[in-house]
Image (cartoon, rainbow, N blue to C red; front, side, top):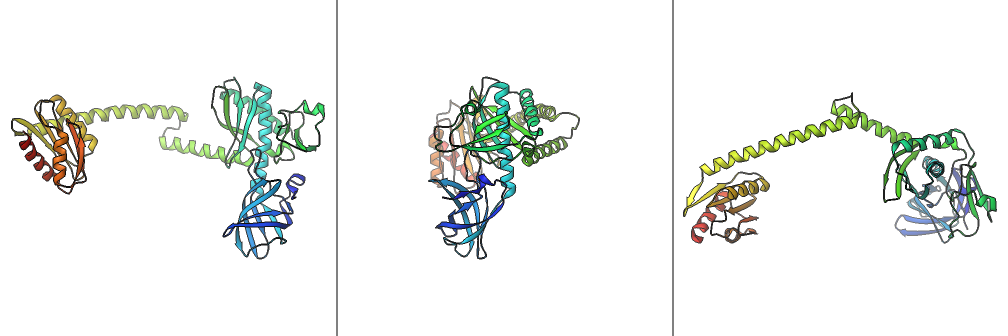
Length: 407
């Protein structure tokens, strides 16, 4: 069984160990068991450590550590010669990653304890991600930024008091200690129980990694929160250096947004509201102008229409969008009787008719497309086609000939 130095010496960054077992999964991918390790395996919402296991002849970059059947498995990628069981290796963890995760985990204990104290909400879930952490709480309380700020102030006050964080193993919990726990020991836990204690502020069973003193946590800052169900809220927060990094990203985004908007006197949300209103007005103006242009285009098309068997045939071959073609065609056939619309570009065709024209546009489109190896179809009133090997004028001329035949 691997000796778990991450518990007994949580601030140890390097150690010499022996490979007890190694398996190669495929090529340079390997999984190792060591006689002792400083690598924390993933669990309890805290991600695993990462780092390096190496000798003079090879290096294994460890990206994931997990527990299986009581053993600590180190997964990584090999560079150099193949290791073997019995090799003595240097084991090093990514200390910045580990230490920041320790801060996040201890910060979560403090935050969850203060939330429980202030609004009576139990923490039901916790997870550390690369850039932030999340907890989920159950409460009837409606969270808002005023309440969150009160919680943050009290949590950060605990950090500033420089309270020692203790982690103690028990074969059996004393009754008086058990009554003080923020949450009860899971029935899944067998054998020794590890209790993490921050004075009387938070006492809870936990297998995660923690700092020695609350002052090491640094700033605790809630980034966002939202309601998942009627009683479950998700709160995303950061601690330590990650808090500074994320806050600076937010402030940079804020300052760049204000600079882009060009109005530095208002709060950002007011500037955005003004932009939204301005955009909405411009969009309305644009739509009105677009409709006027279409009206003018329709008037011009009607003036240039041709007569076929007593019907007005309106032709359009401009390279505009199918949406515009359809809008022009629909407005024409809705407002003009005895009208046929024939539209064609290098990519698609659209035929339409008013209801008083005795031609099926679906049949017309299929007949024209059939001559030019195209595809098309639609309804008796409007049909579309494409993928043909013909120019727009050829499509229009063929459609006129077919109209004469059909009529």
